[in-house]
Length: 196
Image 1 (tube, rainbow, N blue to C red):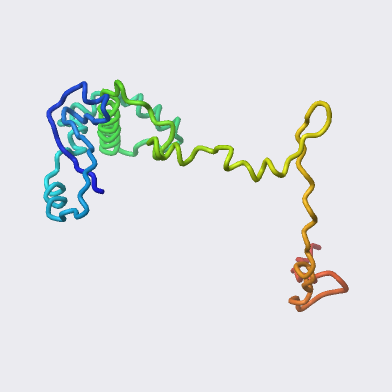
Image 2: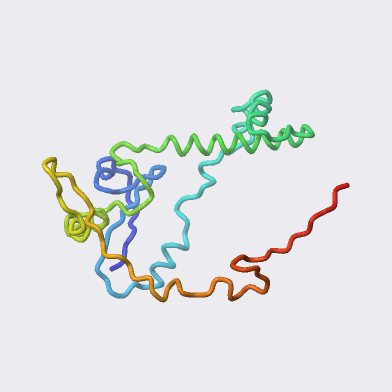
């Protein structure tokens, strides 16, 4: 089974059907039952980029530096316990970098997420995966077998298990591998400086 990727024109009602929209282009994930995947088809699909991170970055330098002032930059550097810039060129570079990062974050935040269920964590959230991860009574039968109900209040108490046989497991000679010992104790050499 392989996954085919088709690019379509933007249609808002398709978002509810599990189709993702990224900057006006729709990507539909559809499963196909082909046992042999053609390497040429995959390489031809991946050879032409359809989207770039550069489209989220500001087009001109003025766009990136106008968002944050010198005073705000110095305040952020102090809050982060970072050193202030040593020269005006270094400060201009910091302002440009911070401005482009802010522009990038704003572009990411502007993506329409209506109808998209937020992720609770980064994992497979399909119905099959949730069913596989669900803990039912079948999984807990062994744990329930180790419990018993006691008294009028019907308290649950864990049954006492049989003692574990440790014979042979703890019969080894602890001091056998040491070169220096006094009685049943290890001898550890340490240097002591004379303080006079």
